[in-house]
Length: 368
Image (cartoon, rainbow, N blue to C red; front, side, top):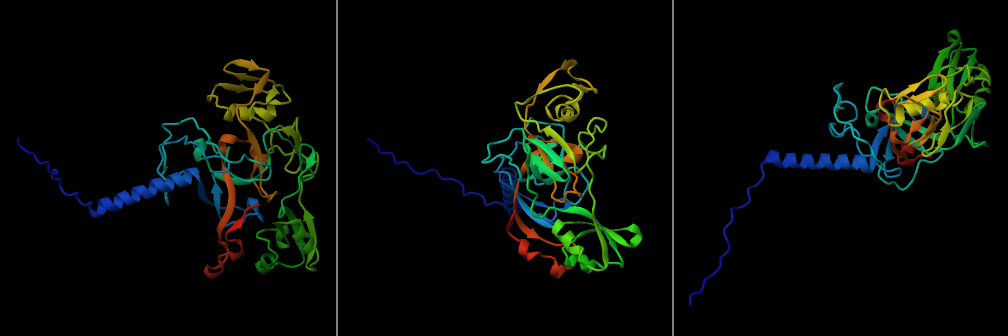
């Protein structure tokens, strides 16, 4: 009888990765991890315009939560990671729209609520796919199903007066007896100033409290609130039908914000409010919806009623007279909603010198 001993098979020692391969693997892992975090949890944004002043300032850097409302699956998968519309520092597109997918929203732990500060893709941006449209940030004034109205600059939701944001701003004309230097405006926390009236006055955007304070200075002869009166008409205000609805930026409505599952009658009175949402955001092909003053045709068939397939929202800036918002392009569809602004992690004043740029009081400040 013979005895056979089993021996471990010899293996070649594992080849060590080269320097460039090690760095390549590390960079690939970092890009994938950052892309997943950015898509599913939090993303950093900056405030480039004064439409939300004084609630949010130009130069604020924010974290926007995708977890609150749930992250969206990508519509445009062919995209350079960690970019939005262009490759960093260039005008070269960072994506191809050769493939467009249907978007789904993963579950979140909240829904969009009245008064939330929301980042969304600008609906009026038709030059890019939905998920790559310009990012806007505004306050959600009305949610799906709300009846909204604005009378003399005051917003009513479901017939109840909505309190103004704590630091809401409006436009005021200042007639002065002498030129006013920049330091004076800065000391009074006024950052949005234009010369007017041939150099003897200014148009400023500021809070009502600051406007009242300005009346106490001897060299300011008059402070006038610029507002649109009830009955005055602006053709650029939603629903862009001044012959039927003589609305303006300070007076509009009432009308109902579309809600998923809500059915509306389609007639000459309702068409101005709802045709854009049906035509652009409800998933129909480019030429499948035809609109006239008195009817809507879908795939050649006239409809008398329509049931909405998603929720919509009404967004407005806190700087009410210097904000391009839903008053000028209508409802924001739910599939355009990116996330909820939750935290200012850094703030830098672009008008200050290097050593005075940081606004220390705003670092790690929550957003209300």
